[in-house]
Length: 153
Image (cartoon, rainbow, N blue to C red):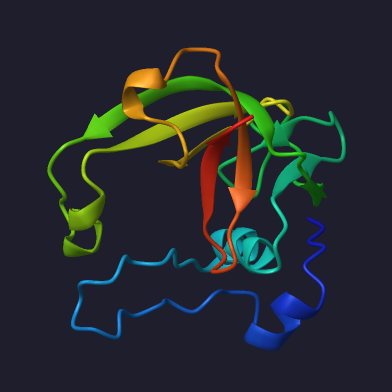
């Protein structure tokens, strides 16, 4: 297996540290990850959206894992994504299940199928829930805090 993390993985042992809310739990939880998920979010923390790509059959994959579901190879690299895709599906949440999201309801969680063929879930930003449409062009944007959102394109 090849991992092209560079300095980010070396500085923290290859896993992202969990983020803890500093105001007693009302802040939005930040993603946490260990292993391959930690590497994914470390790239996001550097402002890059990257996914694994099999070195043998060239298949892109997300969620991160050791082996390719297409050919079984364990040879892969992290490749940069253009973040462009289309809405595959979504759901609208009307009741916050975490206090950090209470001011955001209703909000839409969108699954976008990106140009590379992977699907990614994120909150919609700049798109009213009633304006969401299957196949709508969207862009995954990595934010300054290392999280990402789906915006209209």
